[in-house]
Length: 392
Ligand code: 3PG
Image (tube, rainbow, N blue to C red; front, top):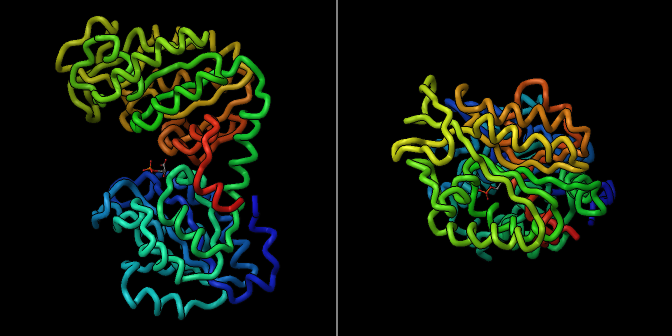
């Protein structure tokens, strides 16, 4: 990997550096409520500032699909970054406007500017050359410090570094690759993967590759709904992507042939509505009504996860097992979080939501917390990540 610390001082002084960060952070009532991804980028930002570079940061937030969605603006994130850095971070609200060029031209050495949400522009996800040229025109050096988005062949990850050709890995990206390599290169076995969360389609597909190197897969959260529905269990009003059902069913058969155990919930916590203070009920997976919504794994399921976790040599966890944002929907998730800490295994936790959903005081107790979700899974599954390839 071509790392940022290799850049010579004279290269950085006065240089405009385009830094891809992942500030796809959790927001509530217009405030950043989980800023670990932002904190993870500070080393790189501080290093570049100290060397006298002019920083143009770029990120996405959420999935606005090429349109301006006010709630997904990065303005609040720029303000939060100013607080974290203790320096003013300016904000360019329209990447395509002349005003942005002026702002960039006026940057002094050490100044930091954040561009508005890249995904407001269809060219980002389309990996569009024209959009990429626009971004590339802002700087002469590219740094990728957004490991969490590195599995996306989007303009800011792929086309921009191809155009600039002077590309480096930031410190967070390096840390991620080093720590994830500990799991891929000769892990201590049994290797247990725990999969949950909402972004199901990306994960379920990657699990096929997981069959080649993990010993046991425990499934909860939104990911479990697909497996349960594929086995014809009634999952009520719970979220499920129907087009994945055959795939999930097939995966269960493949796992059996490969000798990989996949444990799906045998009981769940259900509610009638996803809202604070809702009444919940624990139900066997055969007993759900059509208006039930699965909000967490049940106690029997936690029990079934216990032994594999206790005996694991390595544990990889991605995706919350309950709707942790609500107090009543997170007991199972929290219990598993505790079991993982107590296991004594090498424990790697990944994903913005997984981390945001960790019970207080546990975060520091895992071997490594990755800022990434889908990217972690793809990396572990042996896929080439466009954002990592770009800085090789
Ligand atoms: C993430 O949260 O995993 C990254 O920011 C990538 O987001 P995406 O899944 O919307 O591409």
